[in-house]
Image 1 (cartoon, rainbow, N blue to C red):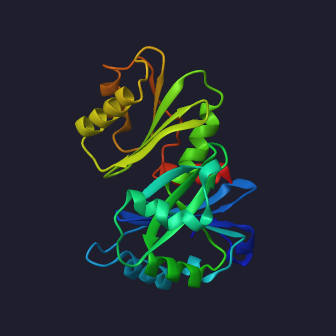
Image 2: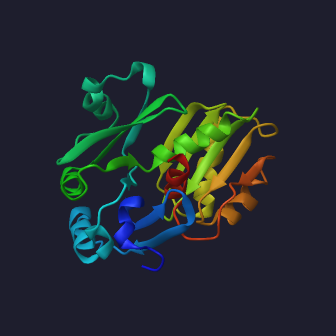
Length: 260
């Protein structure tokens, strides 16, 4: 791992992203932007996430060291949002399963988004959660949409327009609607074709009553972003891409760095 001195690992941040599409992780120094390493780790789709995670933890040198902080992102469509003022810890599972059917071996967790005054409640595999707690007892676990909401809500607060944000991933798309930092909509759509993504974006746009002339669509992520931007501009006046470095780091992982 070029550039990472594991003798000084306790000065670095370790961030792990777990998705059905594959795993990835980064090691960064919080005060030295150039001191950062990122890599992907392929998953065996015939095995469970826990089995893949166990294999990655056992075979990767980076996970044998201690870090200043450990962040873990879980890419999951099983999340819901609750206004912070209405949130009660003891109602966590009740509220979550009001929107989702129960499944075996699931742990329900939550993240608080201070920028949008919202709580994101999400589920993850109980065995995966137990393995992560065993290996990284002090890790913070986030739904992958949580840093996106923080990042986009902060940007939205400085805008006079309502904004629909889309984070484009390989097989899905996170869509978040905001009005001056106030969360209006958030969902993940399982889709990969440009035509399907454009359809869902325009559908949400219409349902939220956004203006084709005055409001704004912001696209993030690397998956077919330019193609979707070109197509969507046939329907919406203000469609732009979030500034992004040309690399393969998932956008939700980037926003986690920024929101640190």
